[in-house]
View 1 (cartoon, rainbow, N blue to C red):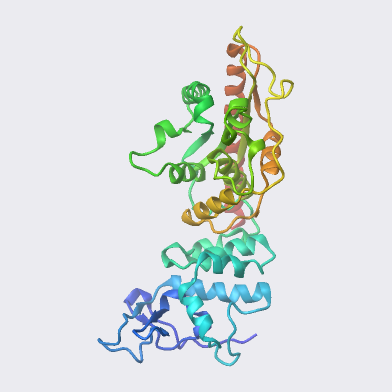
View 2: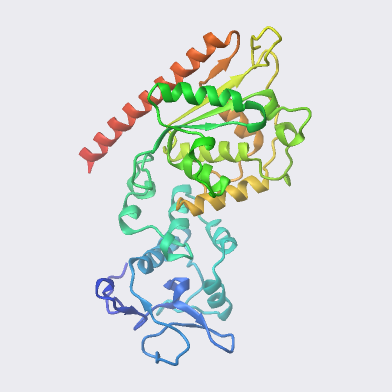
Length: 377
């Protein structure tokens, strides 16, 4: 272990520039530039002039967060992010200079594949982000579960905006979700429902992902028409294949379970809807075989979209990678939920009561957790 001096430091509060002295293997991508000959170089203060062809980079904590990521990567893997000289941490190969300057998501995923600890991998994905605005600041690094050992750290540093997020298939369950939404609102809960909560002009997919990230509990409606539709293959989980398009219902489940791993989603409540008979009564979801038998395959488009939205929300890479459709469905239905069976007047009251109870328990647990965390700190 070596204790080094700080002669390469710059005061970001006084608007100083970085690049007077540096170790190129620890520099973030924004410190590199390409000249007219196509050669990638470092933004150096010493060699700068008004006609140098590049602008200098203002000092920022985000610069140090990338460098910390390089150090943490070495500690986790035993290898440096890119090969470098031991004496001064300078990059050895020109191709690595170019790769660091370009720094794509594919490069990051490949590098992070060497990290075995999933919490360390998640923290590194948030540090080794190309856009400096999206890197974690020091306070959020210190509160990350990898360093605190507390799985319930909410990375956004805020309480959920919504008590409940409603997930459903529009074509089959719009009527059910409308009734459930109103009943939960009447109970005083804050409920995210796309029909009322998406902003005009907002990207639908980004909107529901952001809503889910800001929710405490996830309530999903499962019905034959939604996930075992014999007339629409894209609404039938049994028909999913590795190269299928991204199904938004699956994406919502995938994201909800990922957020549950981080203790950001605190409760998952499946509402299992039976077939409605001619007499108005609903059958039993399981007895009537309303649910699918999904294949044990990973839908690549769902995984790709998950990574995209986690990155956009500043949550880094997934804790669990490449989850199958079979695993998603079995995990969802294994949660204690409610049933639409028999007369609507009976099951509607029961389901709403159970959801309200779940939310209240989650709020109480969250309050107790916050109290313990404050006392520990």
